[in-house]
Length: 340
Image (cartoon, rainbow, N blue to C red):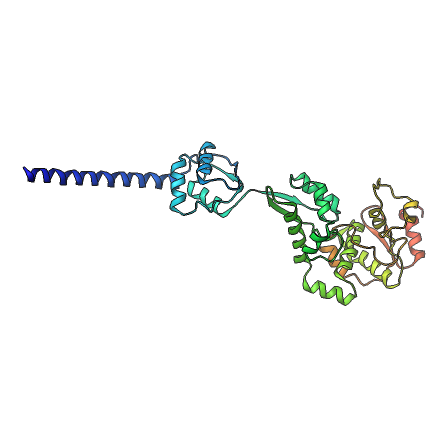
């Protein structure tokens, strides 16, 4: 009798053990299938947001709610097995049910958030750059412009200037949603520092200019250039005039110094005395008038070797260059006044 009871107990334990192993094996296969199998291979991407401080349970619940995963419990368990519960990064993601939970988890761990593009063309001023940043739904124009004139912020970036005009490098940038205004500007200024190499700094010193001077000159070249190939020629005119202590007489510098400019430069504007009016002051204006690109910076550092002192627009994006005032006056008659 006792033997029969013992046999029953042993068999029961064996059956229970076998059952537990079967359950464990079934669960393992289920979890493995869940990890590797997408919910919907043909699903399109959708925006999924993880807020700062959001728990794993909430994230898993939201993933299931958006039909990106099929089982929040399995996803939570898998994430804990990977010891990644605290590594999911906040941000805006482009996720799809066509990816497996394993792939989705890797994306969330690596913080591959959705990025928004901002393209800054060459030659924009700070306010125009701020407008593009606001249009991309980042910080507003006022905050951007204020930061670019904030002395302590400028100093923190290692820039020796009263404004960041000229130092916000024109390029294409990609930022996550909610990137701060400070971080956006810092990235753009850092890009400038990468472009303006030590070799360029040495070249500026050889020419007798500071980096600030070169950026200022490059910004004028940028605004005067219609045809990219003319940058070194335009640069040569300004270098030659500076050497001869002649005024630069650049219309874009005048325009920069006029508040609420209406697009029509008049004789009275040329006579206005401002720190930027190069018809009235000798040498360079007090600072950059725009944010120049790499080619204009290079042209400012490496001008063409010419004897040109003047240029006038041909009204086809190119210019006529002259060595003497007589040649220049003839060019003005031909291209501006249309007199032969």
